[in-house]
Length: 277
Image (cartoon, rainbow, N blue to C red; front, top):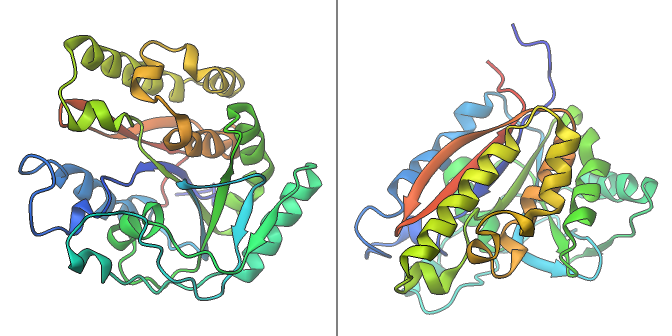
C-alpha cells in the first residue's frame, strides 16, 4: 500500500527537436525509438494523474526565474530546418494561473525574485516529450525558466524552494539531455570523447543514486569537476533542469530509469521518489 502521496520527480531527455514525429529518419534508423518508448511509459510509471505539471526546460533562460502565465499557451516552434508538418503539431494543454502564484510565493519566501511572461508558449522541451507522456493534453502545465547565469547552486536552491509542490499534487519535470554536445553527437568525434561521455554518464548515475542527498546536491553543484563533464556539456543549460529537480526532491532517493546510446553517446533519465501503485 502506498502511504507517501508525494509525487515523484523526473529529469527526462526530450530528444532531438521533433525527432519522435518525423516520417524521415533523423539520425540512423531506430535512433530515438527507445527514448520515445521510455517517454510513452512515464504516465504508467507515475501511476496517478497530477493536478498540474511544472516543467523546467533547457530552452528558456531569463535573468530571474520566469513563469509562463498565459492560461492557454501557444506552441513555440523553436527548432529550425525541419519538414513543414513538424510545425503543425498541436498540444493544447491549458496553463495554470493558480500554480504560477503558488510558485512565485514559494520562491519569494526563500528570497528568490521571479517574474511572469504572459506571451511565452510551450517550447519543444515541453510539447515534444509531453505529446508522448500525456498525449491527451488535459493536464495544466506551467513552464518556468532557468536563470541565465546558469549557476548550478542557485538552481539546486530554486528546486529546494519548490519542494512543497510535490505534496500538493504537482508533477515536477526537468526537461533536457544528460548528454548535450551537438557538434560531437552529429559529427565525427574521437574515441576519447566517447569515453568522456561514458565516464560522465556513469558519474551522473552514481551521484543521483547517493543516499546522502546533501552530498548528492553538493556534487551536482560541482558537476563540471566530474570526469568528462565539459565534453558532455560544453554549455550546461541541458543539465541544469536536473539541478532544480534534485533540489526539489529533498530526501527522495534517485535512480536511473532509462539509459540508451544515441549515436554512440550515452543518455539517461532519472526518477526521484516512488510511483503510485
